[in-house]
Image (tube, rainbow over all chains, first blue to last red; front, side, top):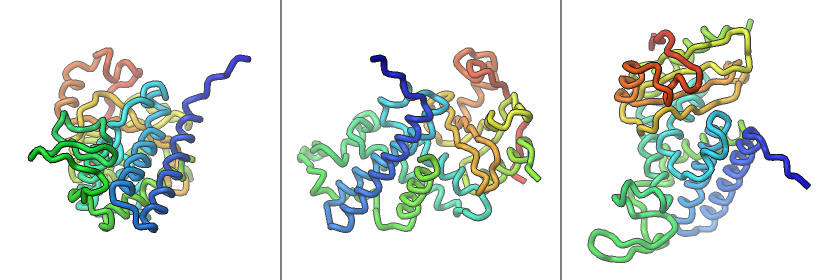
Length: 166
Length: 109
């Protein structure tokens, strides 16, 4: 039997649905008091997948599926479009904060280390500049306050953007 | 009454300038194909500080609930990338590869 290849639109919807599931998993972890690295890990995965949902139709699934480094550039674009209507505006400082957070979220993926500059990540131990081996579950990720207004807005954006595609 | 693609592009540009402090220029990418509502409005947005990844379009479906009746495609580039596009519009790895060309600049006001 021959398998008919899925079209890019199918992949895009699938990414969006999985992003919603990742966000749901993050909520469960947050409400159960799981370490911050696990909450951030699912946030990073949701952010990556919503970006891939929107990139897939114009770039093709085969071109976007293997890379993790889409969040820093594309999440601010998604924010710009979704907050670009009169009914749903955002302050410019919040947009700057979303851009900063998008970069911080992208480097949570171990493969995205800014050319070995950012070894801190939400999954695997790493060695810091002082020679100490750091454990994600014991690290506080000081660059991301995951209770801040901006990150709550970002999480809401990822959910809205995913729902709109799913 | 449904707005044209051209009118929608102008209002999108204003909104994007309004909420993105690093946005320097917005251009329409031609052809706009007003007669084909499935063909997206294509915008080239020049953003200071963006990551340089070349022409990597991102597409948003039409969203009539938010007043956007057409799909919207955005190509975000840095000022350096924009200069390279402007100086060499026929670059086969650039806009030309997609069959697009630079159209008019849209203002913030």
